[in-house]
Each structure stands twice: as structure tokens, then as C-alpha cells.
Length: 92
Image 1 (cartoon, rainbow, N blue to C red):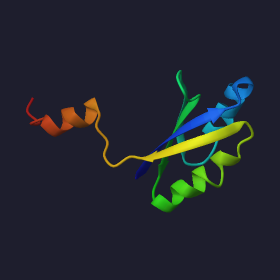
Image 2 (image 1 turned 180 degrees about the vertical axis):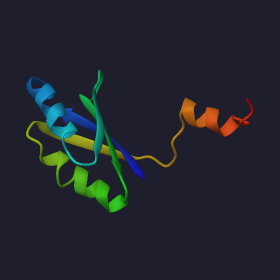
Image 3 (image 1 turned 135 degrees about the vertical axis):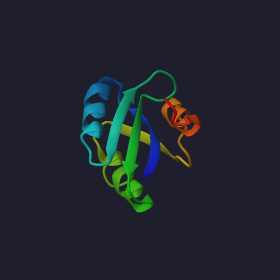
Image 4 (image 1 turned 90 degrees about the vertical axis):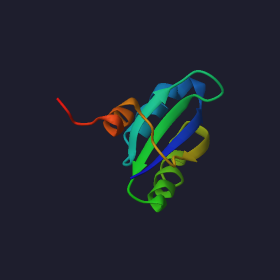
């Protein structure tokens, strides 16, 4: 599974509509409204690298109200759940 994090600058007057439209796209697992230099963060989860381009370039960038995007591909995932599983000995 390929994960990409997409930073989205959006038309400020349309952020909720833009977020909902992005969230409805195939391959988008989550959309967050955030503070700072960007307006939204979208998580793309797809089986192949080529699918990232299909989601971001062919769909997300064409959502009305999206002004600019910046995409980051995740190399490795770290989470509390993953770390607990890795260090679990399986003893009860």
C-alpha cells in the first residue's frame, strides 16, 4: 500500500466544500482542515505509485477551489500501534 500526504491550498471561502469533494474521491482515506500555511491535508492510500498520480493529478487537482497542492510520498509508517506490536512478546 502506497501512502501519500497531500498539502492543499484552497479558496478560503470554499474550504468545507473542497474538503468534502476531496474526501469523496477514490483513493482518499482522510482529509483534515488545518491551521498554518496550508488549508487541508489529504491522505492518499493506493496500491501502486501510478495510482498516486491518478488520484492527485487527474482528480484532486481538478476539484473546484483547489489552488495549489504539494505531495509527499511516505517511505515508512510509524505509529504507537505498530511499535507496540513490534515489541510484544505475545505472552499473557
